[in-house]
Amino acid sequence: MLKQKVYEAFREALGTKEITLLNPTRPEFGDFAVNIHRFESASWRRDSKVENVIKKLAQNELFEKIEQKGSFINVFIKIETLLNELQTIQKKQEKYGYIDQKGIRINLEYGDPNTHKLPHIGHLFSYVVGESWARILEATGNTIYRCCYQGDVGPHVAKCLYGIQSSGARIQDLEKKSLEERVSLLQKAYQEGSKVYKEDPKAKGEIDEINKKIYEGEPLVRKLWETTRSWSLEYYQQFEMKLDISYDQHYFESQTSDLGKKIVQQHLGNIFEESEGAVVFRGEKHNLHTRVFITTLGTPTYEAKDLALVTLKAKDWPFEKAIITTASEQNEYFKVVIKAIEEVHPEFKDKISHIGFGLIDLKSGKMSSRTGNIISAMDLVANVKKIVQNDLLSENKDDKTADIISLGAVKFAFLKSEARKNILFDIEESVSLKGNSGPYLQYVYARTQSVLRNGEWRFESGEWNSQISNLNFQIGLEELALLRSFPHFPEVVENAGTTYSPHLICTYLYDLAQKFNAFYEKCPILQAQEDVRDLRLALTAATGHIIKNGLHLLGIKVLDKI
Image (cartoon, rainbow, N blue to C red; front, side, top):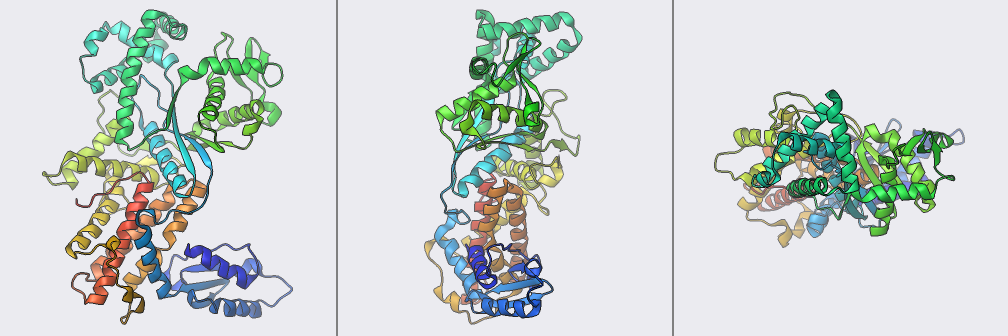
């Protein structure tokens, strides 16, 4: 990685490893910079010291020019070095930007929708962010085990079954309907059950009884539960395929109830204690708060089930680190749960972490829903797809193209902001071809492929003119801007993996796409003389590779033609 070479040059010149390399936002300030103010001390004169540092840097073959601007030393990379990066892109192709290092085994949990309900926008956000994290972590050398934990028992399921029973619908009749109709019915039944649970004491008692029978395995209720559960799971399987997500393991709440209760009871007295008929974990001992793990009715809580879940995870696939992703509303909850897990399993200390992401809100209320006032994940995607079909695509474009663009629009809109912050989703902005959007990047990629087809030139085929390294013409500003952008992609990927920040990749790709469009407008490609044409085609191909690789890390597909 070029950044590492620059770091080593500064380390040698400054005589310290405590160096922070900066990427100047303006080209006149070079390719990399270091703030030397932090290295000042009363024991040496700053000017003479800086002069020595610059002299040492000037001896390095990487640099074309070194300048001091205020408290910064700015370095400019030689054109030959930047051109060599094109050859690196050519060799690595779809692996360019990936970090070749030995990582660790990471269990990553994300998505986590409940059965018997449609996934809402928050679940979609978790799916999208989690999958992007998985791909970025893999690109930085780690081995990822993707898992999803779904609530398939509990009050929400009982409310759904009550709604079905009270409607008088017969299962044999419902099974004749399409899968989409069946899961929509489950959502409506759940909504009806939730409504009467709050308003009707008699209905509340009946729903509580259904919930009890689910856990006890009462035959009639169990059969209804199993049938409706299978509908939900089939729907989620198709939904995850549509999102291009493939899990290694699905876990279910029904698997963790008994095990969670057993684990808590095994540690009663030393880790957990009885309190007013319940069993609790005293978080105050660890500067946290107390949480209930077994209720007064003797049923395990979510906390106990999460304790069982990590036990199952470790048994199925031993990990070096486990990451749980949920909405940030559960940050405090997981502080207590993780501490309880570490008390029960000391071998997991500092190996389990929770990352809370922000909440999603819609800027516009002009979205239709098939299930009343609830905007489901698929409602959102369907509304975006409708705009894509009506405004962006010609009538002859197939449905698959619309799916790729609409999903790209949603995913990029979710990922371009910091995941830990709340996001305001603007449906019009998400499909804009003039702004920071997924479709914009997909169109720029398609443009690069169109140029290469028309030029009958393939970057990966070896049609690389080695004489480009010995240019006999002046490289323009737009060409230089692209050359300077390329080497930063691997470091952006590395930073995104270290900080769980896909938005860094989004920002980089948008900036690169803007630079390419400026280059495309100012620099004739196919009409240029041969050596210039070769360079510009190489720049075009490299841009396409990086956009494709970057979008892949975001879970977004590209199209060669739009």
